[in-house]
Length: 156
Image (cartoon, rainbow, N blue to C red; front, side, top):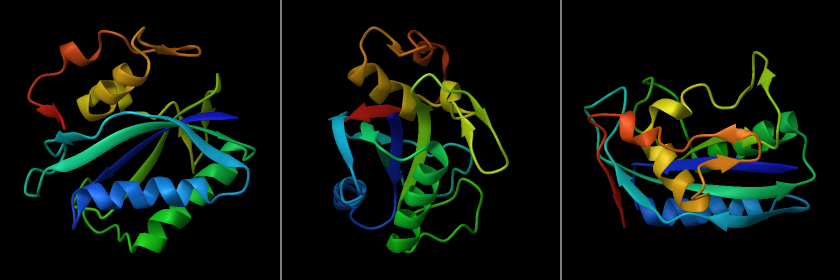
């Protein structure tokens, strides 16, 4: 299956955290990162009293089904020591499933496409870098980033 994952961090060595998260994803059985965007420095969204984030999007090919993949990325987050205390608060690593092939999923543990990706420049800008035509399979996102105000995003 093909996935687009969003990875973000704003605690510790942000660049190293992203590199380690990608390396951890690539250790999953029969899973590989096939595309990755540049790293973007972004303002926090939803909770302002924290440091800026580094964000990236990656395309992953894996034998995992979506529920196995969400379990795997939550396990990677736990391995980094991620603790969920403040909604949208600081985090050592955050790995979100943005898209899964042409699937739409609504379950208590997983929603695909990610329910807020259209509202977040820190997702849309790296997506546009990976897919300049503004689409991944049946998902279309071209032009959405320009409609979002007050979210500074800087490509590193």
